[in-house]
Image (cartoon, rainbow, N blue to C red):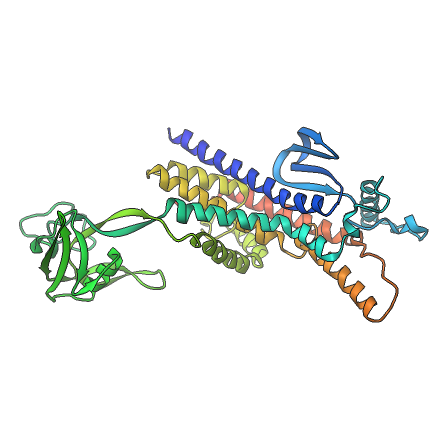
Length: 434
């Protein structure tokens, strides 16, 4: 059963990631077609084509390696310089050959367009919209997924309804599980509190959450305070004297420490509380800021992960994950002994976080990422504006094929980092769930 649950978790994440990639490419496809650009292909994955079908002028399909996707637009770059009578040779050498091959492939996409319906011919703003459409689609999907978790499912919250009352007070850190005659009765039991009581106020202060009630109790050791509860539709006032005890307390910084606080010995009923509709987008934006703060450290973090892998050290739980690691984590979440709703919420939140990572990562201003194409479009716009300002002839469109060597280096770096992370996720995985 555990193996089946693990497989289900992995499959759910893979399907969710495939949908995320498909929507990312749809974010490019829709504005491209709206602006009249000819789109030859819309593909999910890379490598050999598994299935495809042509609708109109566009071929839609799936490829063997579901590690990304792409759309093929006519004229991503301007025509080769040689097409207008100028010397279009890129020179000799490995990188020069790559530049020439890129120009040749680009010219093939322009065949039959007569210089029209080409991406490079669009105004700068439209080119930027097309290239940002993919990442923005991932951000919007993250909004929806976080919304499902926070608003649709809700956040598990300790309510003001008492779930259980401790019969006695056990020493902190003890392995003892049952009360003995020598153990003192808990203040809650001595005061007459019962499971099912709903706390209305503590020491004269109305409370809406169990955390608010606990804060007042913890701040009132060895002081007799009134607690108003609702029982069987009637309000009752009970007097309780919290005892001074060592308990684990979570501070405002999230750190859990041991402190001497007031203690009465009761636990709360935990329920899913639906959050406001803006909680999902708010959580997505907060996560975006966190990922953006980490992404520039990615090479260093990958290097540290490689060191941990080859030295046998325990891996940093905050280290980056590959698709393999994310799938493994989803599988582990699916096998946790918890309600199905809890596990579903965790997997949905994981998928939302992956979409945030896709959004931020694709905005890196380097080709072949979307952010690199945005930079090229903006640079072309700056050149045109500069020429117009000084009444000069319009400049030639920016020939981004000259950046193919840089693109090659970026791709090699991404493949290398991805390989390191996959190996680490296989042989030194993150142990988030113990």
